[in-house]
Image (cartoon, rainbow, N blue to C red):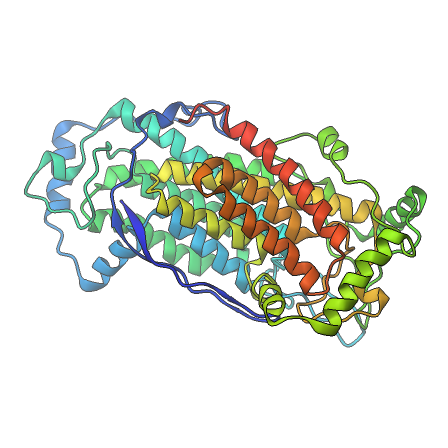
Length: 502
């Protein structure tokens, strides 16, 4: 049960605010049901059957469940819920994730003592709320969400075609489902698989949202019953499978190094290293009071699609140094824009700002990926696969970019007298996060949708240019960030090409 895009409303991005309007969608049948998806290679699971799903109950018991679904009388609110979740469980849970990312993308303010408190995961509703969903955090949350959805659905597909239970409306033709019919077996429920896996991941990433997420979970698991496309045992088996797979995914998250990503104790060593490699002017916070650098150790977080040695080998070369001919050329470009910024440049800078209150550049590109999957009429498992590769590429891009930023600790244009209207990031300039994120995601999307590759890459270039137009990055930050992102995205594509999906 999927939905095709009928109306796309562009998001509006302002320097300090972002309103997110999601797409209006209509039902469609997937272009392919992907019967062999149970054989695709997973990210975390060693095998699609690593988590057991119980054998089917008796035919008589199933017939009783079918009769129970048949007898359901659905309210108007329940019909609305069916239509909402019928757009696709993967699609909807990723919308929810982006909503939460935007809600929590608020930098902590300084207290009366001029100190910036750090959000506390053990007390998420205290001030400042946990998490601060900055770009690296959002990229990580979306990556783990999509990997959990993908691995759980590959496993679900394996069991679907192993047990081959007919959907209620196939067993009893008098049952009229509220969503488009499918030829797929119904056990376990893919909607319940995605719902439970998503709930586990998002609760871990946004622990203060327990009641909100629990309400979404309950509705998502009831929706296929109200739609009369699943019975209770389908939903129970799916939920149990999703929870078990998500637990395995979260085991990785707990040991990936994120807990030490904001370790401020390493900053003196980072500065010393930057001087050692030749940086003559260091980045410094331009806020008053000075804000500690954001996530200085995020570059040490575990990557998905390449190892540590590769991360270091693809690190961009040293940036242009102040007073060099190349640096002066880049600075002169920014000064010209500062003096005579065009309306188009301002519009592009604002559109791609993705600042506080937004779901950040990773969310921006994750949404593009969702839209592309809907346009292609992807099945649930194929949509999850797409988002898993885009999501892991985005997280890898954040890790590699942050490692580069703090390796060189290079200054921002604001340290040379330039002002910006698109926010003031609290971390070094080189390389541009927007450029790295955008080209990593665009490279993956171009490989998945070669007929649209020019569009995705043009969008990535526009996102990269936006940081120059916004006077927040030097041109070299963006050029080298784009090249870095392409290399990062290529590793995700190579992995996708070897996972067995056609």
